[in-house]
Length: 240
Image (cartoon, rainbow, N blue to C red; front, side, top):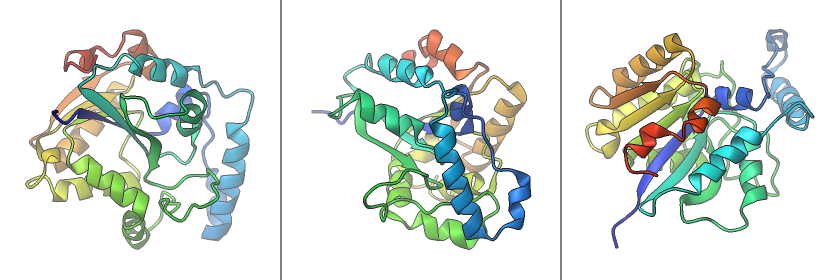
């Protein structure tokens, strides 16, 4: 039987904002020592996730739409967000891994505020101003290393609400660029979804700077509007 093709989804802060989780770290917190900042961020973001204002209907619509994925395809979810809204929704909707998912785990490149009985295999919690030594160490953790290795062997990517402008996210692109001549990522297809056309063009330029042989398609829509249109760019690739 032929190996299924994979769509790798890269979610940034834009997905959280679509769920009305728009909180960001106050600039005044930069005066605190790093570990104090991390503790404050985790406590505040956990509280924000449980706010009645958070609306996860867009996540439910997204996962319901993916149920119509063609049998030859599967999906993999990766995020640079600290929140675990998508992971929580996956857990509430599916007790077993459906045929259209690689697994029900959402890989967090920059760490997460989710508290598990054992978080030892998770990526380190990264701040935007963390230096390269912390980012490199995090890439050696089980979660980040596995996510990166899976990405390098795939060729279809969807970027939602991600700018690649902060240092940890730029670091990810640079690492992908290092293996572009050896692995399928070098000739991959990318779909970028963002209603801001200037942001779309910046992300496109950043991707092509590291992966010059990639093909990049820009979708100037809100993610929710793209869902309403039933993800036509993926449909054209036979995913649905």
